[in-house]
Amino acid sequence: MRKKLIVTLGLVAGLATAAPAVAAPAGQAAGPVVKTADGEVRGAASAQVRSFHGIPYAAPPVGERRWRSPAPVVPWTGVRDATSPGAPCAQPAGYPIGVPGDDEDCLYLNVTTPARATGKLPVIVWIHGGSLMYGTGDMYGPDRLATGGAVVVSMNYRLGVMGFLANDAVGGEASYGLEDQQAALRWVRKNIAAFGGDPRNVTVTGQSGGGYAVCDHLASPRSAGLFDRAIVQSAPCATGGSRTMAEAKADSDRVVSAVGCASAQDVAACLRRVPAATLLKAYGAFNEPRPVSGTAVLPLAPAEALRTGRFNRVPVLVGVNHDEENGMVLGQELAPGGAPMKDAEYAPAVRKQFGERADAVLKRYPLSSYGSAGAALAALRTDSAWSAPSFDTARLLSRWTSTRMYEFAERDTPWFAGYPAPSFPARAQHMAELPYIFDLKLFDALTPAQARLGDRLIGLWTGFAATGRASWPAFQNDGYVQSLTSGAWRRAAFKTGHAYRFWATLPRA
Image (cartoon, rainbow, N blue to C red; front, top):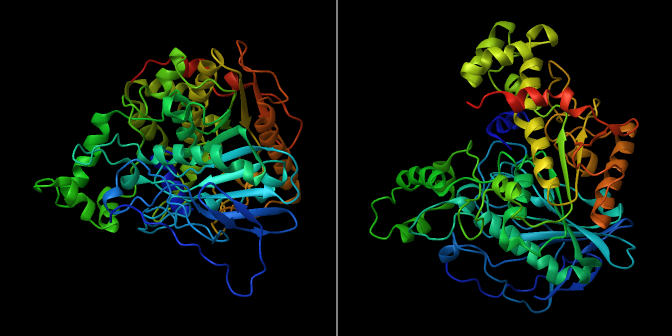
């Protein structure tokens, strides 16, 4: 997610020791027990699914392990209770997609399977979004996705300053959050067969910040062999997914200075003594960390990896929402002190963003063609920041590997639960597809018609996970994009509908 998404959602000590087994709560019926490589876990079962929560996949990154690559779990004895999620990774307060707290013992994952699964099912590994700053894996209820025919895994991973600090004193490559995800994928390869999943059929998928992480796994040699397919939701790899070490260090230097460690005799020791809450405050709530390219973890930025073909070539499903920026603009309206954009504010906003190119943008997106200034601004920002780069991402991928692209274009979508009605329809805004796939309390409950579309989307996700294919043609040279709505699924008029040629030929800033 980008910084403006955060505004939208303003609406809206040493090495680890062996973990003891945790008994099930008194009086609770015995749940299913599965033996992992590190020990046995007891989950819970319903008529629809079996679920296992809070399984450690790496040692707690605390004390001397703060800002180090994830270490293996120390095996436990007995049966570990796996009926409650692990602690959220440390993250700031204030946003519904986040779970504020400063707990660093957070490297846990969750597994959900159909109740009566037989054989080895495809595995979907979900990487949650939230700008790599917010969120937890368990926030996204996977029961409907699992009953669609897959084993679903989600994980928590280090976020923000705890996951992406770049400082020579602590070493590393400032991509600890990405390394955590790789450790979770290794756990899946090693253990998922015990839960009924096929360890040789793993699909890694993520949305927004999580989608950019999928871009990084496509590009990272250290992710090679850890997954067999990929789904990228609302995260154009062609324009994002990493930053340079210089950018990361500039971002981190102000934190090191703010917490009083810049002039310490032992900077690393000083940083590892600072309370997590202090580090979170110094880092701030509006950053968007990214893994660092030019390192062993990520030698090439995703765009360069895709351009040159030096990436993990697996079948990829690339998706973007028709109205990505609607939620961002509406979020600014509904945030404290906000209001719908006035017509007179439209041109200045475009000029501020596009500078010398603004006249061409205003001519292509005249205010008179839209119902409001906010709707006009959202349309042009969607096309420039999301639609065109997502098309470019599919184009780059399709030169080297099987690629299919979709556009989620449903117009009647759930709005954020408990918030006032927006000044113009949110439609297929950023995140709009998520409540169709997951049980997500952030949004209003699905209507029966929306639930039916959800079943279709779940069928698409699980079908792609099983086969690496979809029901429409591959992207290839003609740039086929499938429109996903509650009506018939057909080819989208994507390039004309999002002024692709205009943005492709507009001079760079």
